[in-house]
Length: 221
Length: 262
Image (tube, rainbow over all chains, first blue to last red; front, side, top):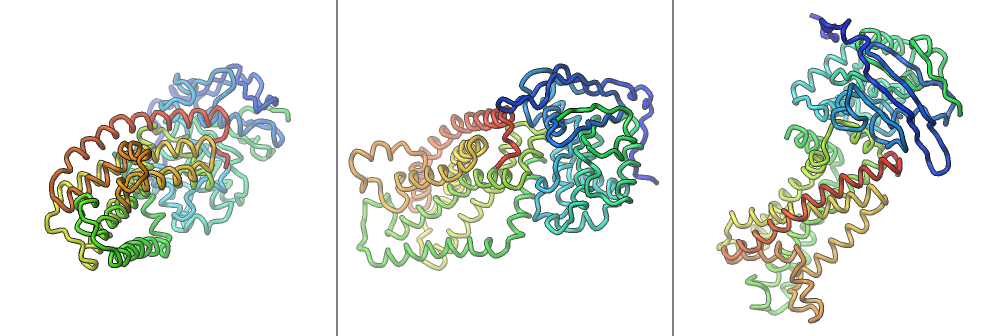
């Protein structure tokens, strides 16, 4: 029996549902406007690339939507819930810069199980969820290894797996293919393809990522 | 509750992964007990000034053990948040669907349990090896006093952690505050030895009630109830306040964009 994510019966209904809306989103750091009036709508099943050079505000936008950075002005709504609220955070899977976001004394598996439990899964459920992602993304030794012994590419795969825990409705992914080898990149995009009703906002400056996205939002530095 | 267990399990696994400091920590506590044991042998018996303790060693051992519990329940929390800032895990935890109270309870769980475990070990060593008299001890009173002391002081830990979130490096201030309270509260000398103008302040320091309660339960087996009630009062006022302040600190850091900074 496959343990890969099942298609929900009403996938067609969920596909196209408005998942993320931002209106006039602004974020200023000191005198510098990093994000200026961003209007964006993402529907279920849609993948949108935030494309732009370093410093153009890609990660800032993801942080604002994730709720770890407050916008200076503007509105964010995730499936009808105000951005940053507990309900909105429950719907989001996030992957930011990976080098410093794991408990480095713990194994990949212990890290994923911990974060799965923070997302409301019981201990056994969390372990099963990690097994499911292991099978889908072929994490293998990454789960067994202590994370301070993992390479950047291994941590990147682990970060993507963490974002997928609990099958969130909205994925916020910051340069998800960075440091990945070809096989891991293929597994990543296959995983995205399988999630027909999930919306994904992907920050990238790689042209090779853009071909996998339906739309591109170009940001200027 | 499952979230709290997840935090505690994570912290235990991390603490266990550093085996040598784990062992050294226990050894350091025994060493401190030994210092007061030998000091006690050079001092004449101080009698009534020691709050019912049969010897200076008995008096100081309680001070030391309670101070270790308090340190673990308060400073550890601030250090833990600081470590998460440095390791970059704080932002990713804040992005999870956790309420502020859940986050606080989770972060405080392991330091709290570890502190109580450590107190039990030191007490066993002091009783078994250094002949600390526990013949009249009220064990229920002892456990109750330790638990409410750790809860009341965990609130101070949360306040220190909130400071760390906003100004970074705030854990040094937490250490200083706990050390000052330890001295003022009567850990290794009775507060009657303090200058007269300091004694009124010493009498309202929460730690004083922890020391008095533990000494009463340990050496007299009675008279700890009032101290437990006062500590409960501190907990009821301080804990919700500390959770609120912690939440405000997280919001302020999100506004400043400093959650991922160190």
